[in-house]
Image (cartoon, rainbow, N blue to C red; front, top):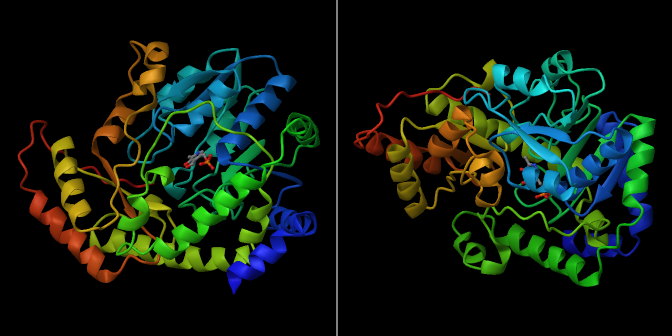
Length: 393
Ligand SMILES: Cc1ncc(COP(=O)(O)O)c(C=O)c1O
């Protein structure tokens, strides 16, 4: 019934889109909001926009993040500058950040709330020159708040969000840009004006994918969509040549009753995140309980332990993932650009991080199976001396 109602609503996209925009602006506490086809499109357009306001090219991004982020910087024709990541917080490493900000030609910094762990935006503001823009990457943190109750994504000069697969709120493929700066909003509207409409076929495809994924998200059925190569599940690709269009008309319908869905998913993910913290005997992330992490990050003691753990968890269908296949400077297409540079924190995450699911299908039995797998693997011989580190975002 929900799918039929959503499809009907998608037939009147402009009215429902205006209503959705108003609701989201009020929720996030921002003055301006634009939808586009994906989070990476929102990011690339944001960077293009900021470049029209200040003609410098350096964009500071985490050395460990989603490959869409460097792809968006390259797509915008700008220069990605990597800042190392602190493996205990997933936020920028202080000395690397200070060094990168020392350059005069920094256009903007992209603090990233990875997995829903907050990046300290005010620290970047305090360290950066006043003319440097701050663009929060809140793709993995929709609806989450900072210590003072402000929504992540609304704290910097602008914020970008993704409504893609596996996010807190999804409609298949879509992205969003927000700002409270009238000048940035005007410039962003100009950058968006040449965007083509999404087109019927991609909208239909996004809709079909969404239906498929909502039916098969249960881990016991997930083998089916993951065997369909055109869905590309679990793949992380670097591709600056992505499509940038307006929002597919089906997306507005698929975001119907978004607040109710979001509250529910936040409740479920917070419970599962807290259960992982408790049962794995870790300190709660950032000393805070009740945070609805998108994935629960866990550092293994060694690369060997991680490989063994992933292998065992995969055979049991536990939805454990290594996340990104490498640090950004090791992406084959970017390797030459960063030759000779070192980012130890990002390298460590790329070698030893696993992330655990927090969605509602994670049952106590799954968590128990993971704990057993972890205990079994703990005896795996390791070349590097194992030094367990607890992730505390
Ligand atoms: C941190 C981060 N930034 C940007 C993006 C890009 O969003 P999209 O997949 O909607 O293009 C993603 C997507 O997973 C992400 O995780």
